[in-house]
Image 1: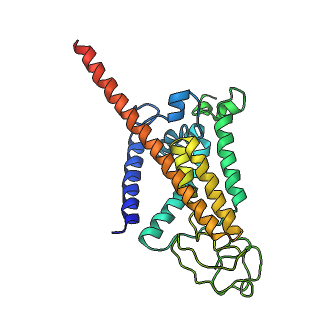
Image 2 (image 1 turned 90 degrees about the vertical axis):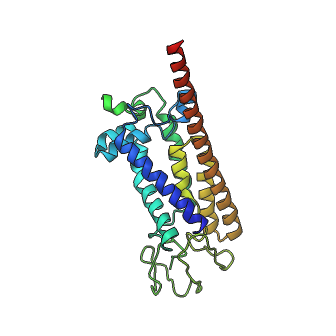
Image 3 (image 1 turned 30 degrees about the vertical axis):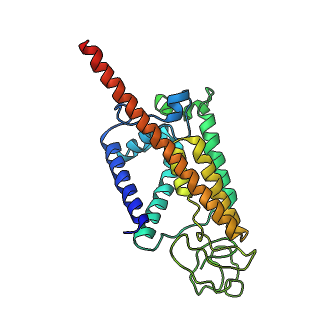
Length: 139
Length: 137
């Protein structure tokens, strides 16, 4: 077995375990999931805060609740899932799924969007405060 | 084949790109396409290299940024952008260097995330154990 295969298997097993646990337990109420390091250490929300709770809600079909937890995750997740499946297929099957080439500018823009999202969701000002994890649920 | 102008994937015998309309058969040298990622192919200097010929690890960069921690994931995204920018400019060596850096920062981000999870787990264990100790003291 090639090294890449072994890492891919490890990632698939870890990912499947994680998804199973996220489906079974709600990170909002159970304490078994680790908190975001940045939020734990500083109290600030990072761009990914609420992503585990969002995935839990998505696994239960609650799109609105997932959106309230982390809209960025809900938008990005389909693309990330596609990329991961494509990568796994290229390792095992030797063929990737069709890819769109992203010009460098788009990737820089994506990075800026992630950073700006992480900053504005900490602002205690309407409407940015709605981007904090779960804030939209209290509307 | 991939269009050298916009990067769209076209049929190998396509005369023009389905996305941007650029002529393909005359402009593109007959470069053998391999479906595997990470196998760079020689091309004319300055011409755009085949998209995906150097992995940019963007998916992993986003994953580690959103699920681990912000600071280490951002360089990974920047290097992923550099890979595609250098591919667009036909700079194979530069793209490979950026690709290595993108991978490195993905691993750093992943490592920091895992280290935090382990540390947090140890703190929880210590907290639980000392809690038990207090109860019986």
